[in-house]
Length: 171
Image (cartoon, rainbow, N blue to C red; front, side):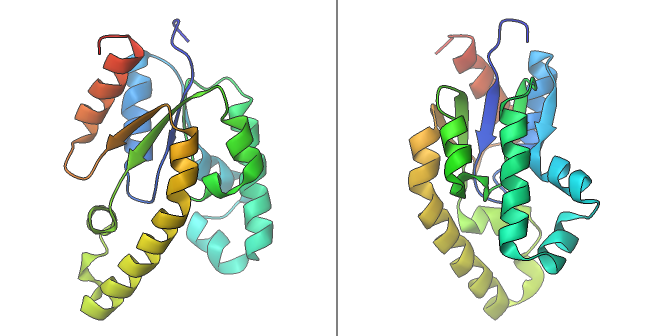
């Protein structure tokens, strides 16, 4: 990994984990794995299909297995799905790793995910659910993070520059 330790990206939906992960891996000349994509590939379903057709405990167990495999693998950059942090085994596996929490608000997340056209009542409901999820997960994200970056008004390239700068000891 070119003397760069593994970097794991965590955060809520729409925080930019996949985009930043791809750009960061390119900048560091290392491999990138996205747990959501690996999970979908392993299930032979899209994530939407998996959430619609699998029982929540089955999906969470599969997600935890994928995350643990990635965290014990050799990828230079790993983007974890937003709910992965809810698994105690995944949190334990993050101990001692370089973990960047890409923090996002529900307003920014719904814009990035293209959900603002849902209509006011639906958008309010989605944001309320997202706020609840982000609030419940925040202590876990904070507990594993070695670096936190607010991404609401920051371009992915700027987030990558910040991570690379910190990783290389420039700041």
